[in-house]
Image (tube, rainbow, N blue to C red):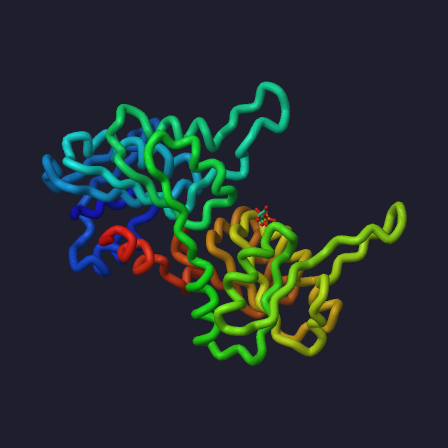
Length: 286
Ligand code: R5P
């Protein structure tokens, strides 16, 4: 199998290739003077089984993926791994006239019938996978975060999801290791007073690990961390599957009193401590 890296997901693609006992295929990427992206797969792929690896965290990722799909049209079988499927939060039409972005992207990727199957990692809303015309499977990196926390030997950690939407993730991280877990709950006390606190578990004097699927602007995590500090939490760690770290997210999170930020490598950053490469490689080889 040939592993074809997209322009912004080269490290993870190389790691997946290593797990499979091969090397990522060499590709050429460059920009034309007007900013357009140029992509060329250097290796011969005619009649081969290929796997393209490219996250969609910005428009460049999408263009790179579409170009690579077109470039490998003569492959025998094409798998696309999209470790971070961006635009999945626009999963329906909230206002008349809006694009359902996740559907638009899925339609684009499934174009021309080149792609045979798709893998994503912890997509924000798995329901968007129905928009693809081919089999699309969501892989779960939550156990990897749990294993990482266990291996770091953080004393008696409490796993906290910043909102109800993160409950399942917190549970999947915590349960295999017997960690306590909870989510933060917003309660309206009066017209202009809102109280946010852990629903059931006390965090006073405890080390807390906040888990979320995506960190974008860092607003959600910064608010959660400040609140947990106010409830006398000890050390606060932040973990996520997909670390976008848009704008000043890193500063917002660290300024809120967070000790450490840890992300997976679905999007490469200095916080990518946990690799999803083996999980993806295992799936590709089944
Ligand atoms: C929301 O539903 C997601 O799970 C994340 O909590 C959210 O996308 C994080 O965004 P931000 O970092 O901008 O607060």
